[in-house]
Amino acid sequence: MAQDPLQRLVPQAPRALCDILDGARGPAEAPIRSEVFGPQRFAQHGRSLGEAHQASRLASRAATFAPRLQSNIEVLREAHAYIGRQAATGYDVSPAAEWLLDNFHLIEAQLEAVRAGLPRNFFRQLPVLQDKPLAGLPRIYGVAWAFVAHTDGAFDEDLLVQFLSAYQETRELNLGEMWALPTTLRVVLIENLRRLAERVAAHKAAREAANLCCDQIARCALPDLAALLAALQLRGVGRMFLGQMALRLRDRGVDSDAGAAASDAQLAWLHEALPDSAALLAQQSADQAADNLSVSNAVTSLRAIGDADWPDIVARSSTLMRMMLTSPVFEAEQSGTRDQTLHAIEHLARRTGRSEVAVGQTLLDLMARAAASPPPGAGSAAPDPARTVADHWLHGAGRPVLAYQLGLQEQPAVRWRALGRRIALPAYLGSLLLGTVGVVAWLLLHQAAVPAGQGWPLAGALLGAGLMLWPASEAVVAVINRLVSESARPDHLPRLALADGIPPEHRVLVVIPGMLTDAES
Image (cartoon, rainbow, N blue to C red; front, side, top):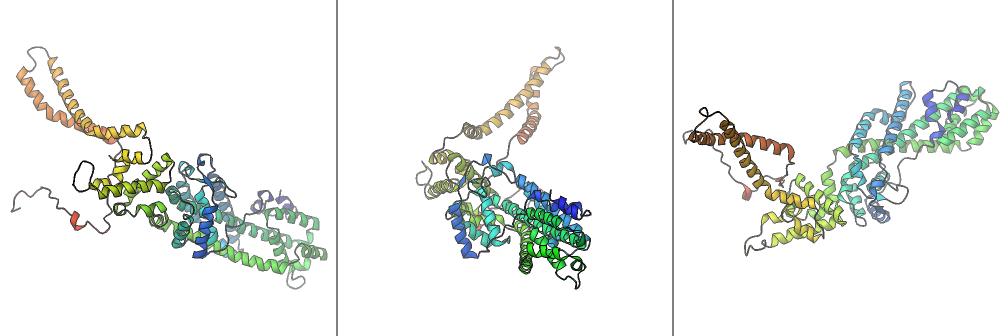
């Protein structure tokens, strides 16, 4: 194991240090960081990425984020604990490490938000990528990965909208993918923070190991140093270890006790292992500055994603939303009503195998024809306003027409629900009538069982039945209403947003008689 050479050289090396430098864990992964694009280059990349992405619907067998997310949480907490101990003992920490220490509470909160926003069934319905390196993961994960990589983790709403719009010029994203984007961006940012935190902690640990070796350099045999270096190379921090040793030993005989104690053989070994120490130190400074910026961008973006107006972002970048907003009725609707319409379109698209845009276009065509012509059999009457509302075609009387236009055979459950809506009022009133009559009949039969001479006469029984109808009906209404409210799911009626208030042509005066019983009052 990687800690064996270190413990041979430095028996007092802390356990946490040995764990972080364990070569069996493999090298620390590089941050999600690539060339930063401007708006035009980003749009070009979005189109090319859409052309390159090959996705399938075999999402039920696809990998999920959950295993990697749990690993990210564990690595982040380990790195945070190690860096915190280093800072508490007086060691200098980099700005990236300070960002992690100061904002770890935010990262923890985001981890909980991601867990809550990752329902397995939802993400399994999303198209998944077929090609490596992200094969088996949702396509929207690849989109989020590209955005994070080419912005260095910085979040810009306008740039994101432009990127998504350009991507959809060549590859349509469905609405579920658009709504999964906020959580997916958080997942990618946390993945990047895990890589950066592990990198910062591993580099810090490699420098600490070099300091421990230099503190007792005279007792470090060359074979043991070579074995330790080989183990650190497995973790990807061998050059960081050598660079710190070079800093400690370069002032031999001047102002460094370690340098003065080092032998010629040890210095020769170091020079052979690291002939370009000056270039390495310059590269380390550049990498540290880049890591500082990446960590600060990621932490800031996690905040910004939570504060962003995602309904507006989706409306500006979703092809389906932009198309539906061409309908004045849909544009005027309240957001909850819009969501009902969009979810229904998603469901129909999955059932028919068509794209959401195709289903939405069919719906808009029906709404437009209804707005331009009166209903069948109405002669020259004005068009029925109810038929210009999407809910009429998705859930109301127009549903069979929409299903026919889409070539969809309605399921028995849908037909039963439609029948249930038609007979709901007669069934409710019939239940009230039968219940009331049943209660009164039960009371009369109970009275009939009284011995002769002690019960009511016939006229009295009829009068009693008439008087009992009202209280019996009240009890039956209360029972049936309670049963209905407990068992039936309420239907939400379509609503308008009325963002600018109620227009004059739709204003009415509602008069409620109350305590005012005469003009003087």
